[in-house]
Image (cartoon, rainbow, N blue to C red; front, side, top):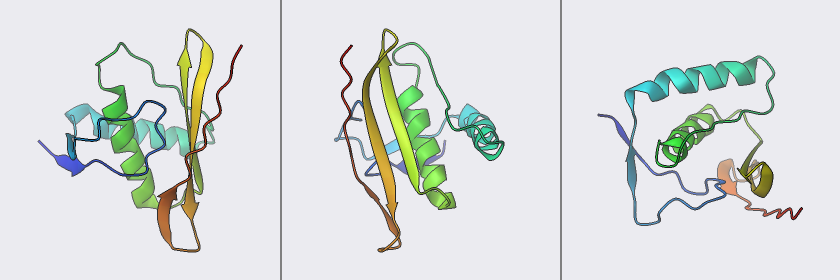
Length: 113
């Protein structure tokens, strides 16, 4: 099974456990990530991934984020978390073009309804 280091500076609304250094890439991730990248190439600006707790949404997101970073074409990635249909938080990742590397600018927007 393929493994990768957990990417740092990932814009996640719920933090991934800090004590984990690697994650396993499930066989289905290639197909799912390919479909997500195709949706972006076709002009989709928002992608929603849902599932029950523990199904692997966060690890899929880590792997998808790694793939986006490898492409290097994205200036900004926004992740949002919702609870009962209301936005809980939003995180923004920006590419630091002056350094030529990626860094995180975690901006939190808490929306209270």
